[in-house]
Length: 217
Ligand code: HEC
Ligand code: HEC
Image (cartoon, rainbow, N blue to C red; front, top):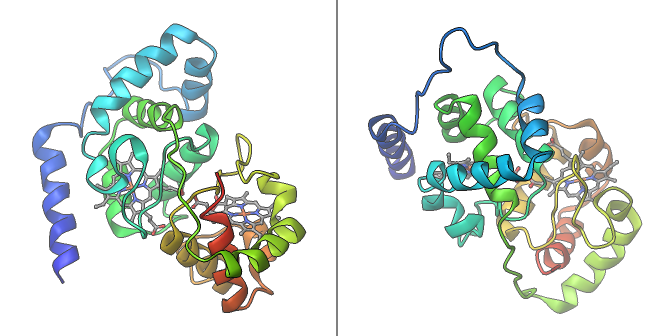
């Protein structure tokens, strides 16, 4: 399969270019990813340094996630403006297999803890470029569903909070795929809240929600 080959090629590139690897220096006590992120977020200078380092770490990511994390591909998620704790949680889920995507799982394993945190801080700090909704009539039904079911967690503007992802302006095919995965319990994405809140959605409801949410600013 051509995509498989592309992924394998890109991965080989990561190892060769040396973003991967950088093991923690010996003797330094290992701290958890959350503590590492927390420490950076509380210190303005550390945050600026992380954004700068993160820009370098993520040049490779831009191949798919776009410049500054604004994806140009409908099936690849935007990372710009995404909430830090959510991004870090997804990185951990890829690493321990609670979230399945062959390419992302392989790639995340190749990053050091510091690189993971820098990438998360960098993407979160990038400006989101809004999109127009593709289908306003469909979006009206989606809007009703959104305010009935989704708004209480994802917020009136779809921007979430530190633990709940921003979904406003997210890429449409990626949204559709993710919602169906939660609903169907197919194993790629596991989350009890999202499973409960998608289980009664029909495919047509998902199309409507996606038309609305992908057009939110
Ligand atoms: C070959 C394309 C490709 C590259 C390169 C790539 N990604 Fe991804 N990434 C994806 C796809 C596709 C998904 C969606 C996976 C899924 O849900 O099945 C994804 C998902 C993610 C997610 C979860 C986003 C969310 O909204 O839940 C994060 C975080 C992420 N990638 C970070 C990175 C970082 C950091 C890099 C660079 C070190 C990177 N990606 C490089 C294709 C790529
Ligand atoms: C009870 C709280 C709650 C409700 C209600 C809820 N969500 Fe979520 N949502 C979450 C949490 C928590 C996650 C992160 C799950 C994970 O780690 O995979 C999430 C993840 C998502 C994602 C994945 C985002 C990404 O970047 O990959 C999408 C899309 C989403 N929700 C859409 C919706 C929609 C649409 C609705 C309404 C039908 C909804 N959610 C209702 C809590 C909720």
